[in-house]
Length: 343
Image (cartoon, rainbow, N blue to C red; front, side, top):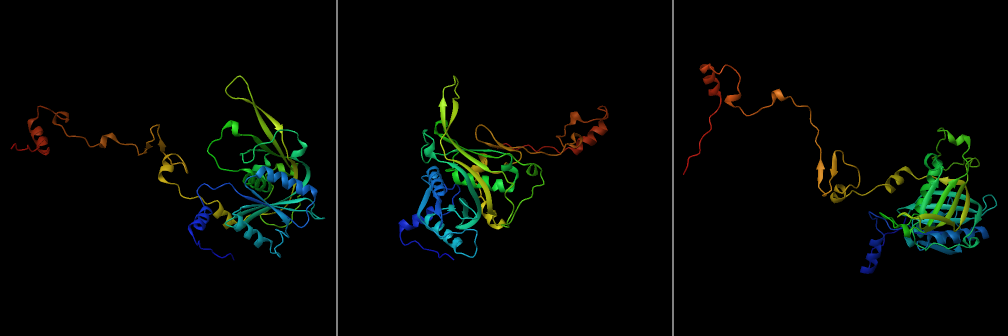
């Protein structure tokens, strides 16, 4: 169990407050860890992924004995220690063995605890050096494009989409300038087999072994954008391959604990000003007009106008106007108004 450190001075206190949870989180920091055996391919792949993640990436130069899926080792405690030490929430572990060559393990953390893991195998790779084209500026937010229905239907690909989004998403912004969009990361799948087209595909909610040979491969392609004149206000966009290009096959995985995932998805309560401006859950029958005023609509039951209580006036009463007796009786029911005494 990690011990709680109390700040000794104002500088350390500010550093600890910067690591506290925020309503809008900072960009996620990823740590690249090399296992005991990494070949030339894995080293080159992790180097190019580090170039895409920079400046929010930390690369460990030394090799470490890390086996995330082996519960009999101290790998999980080492990951949690590195997460606290470097204020990181993502890990990419490279390990190559005879049984699982060229393996990459994506690990996501929450509250310095392992949330979920996904292992993929690098089947083919083309680095940035093989493309003699301009590269994007480090630190720019990419445009993520997922081209397959499996990323919305199959549980393994839903996890892969969420993991890649957290890994490359960068800083959370409300809007982005078109000229600031320098590169695009396109993620697609191989042709979907007939067994996965139906809705009978069940989710694997445990880390038990499963047959992943029938799952389509994931293709990652990276492009730079070029804005050309089109004769209108909207420019014409051309994509130029930048690299790296990866073909990944799904392997082992570990899903998140339901209670820990519930805590990770928990959002803070919105302020009153944010709710009135339209953020958060939409309020029924409430809207904000152009002037910024909050207006509401109230629905009531249908009214019976015959039972509506109105002001009693002698001239509007029914009956025979010649009947003075009835008029006197009816007029006696109407209370007379008292006149104010003038001073």
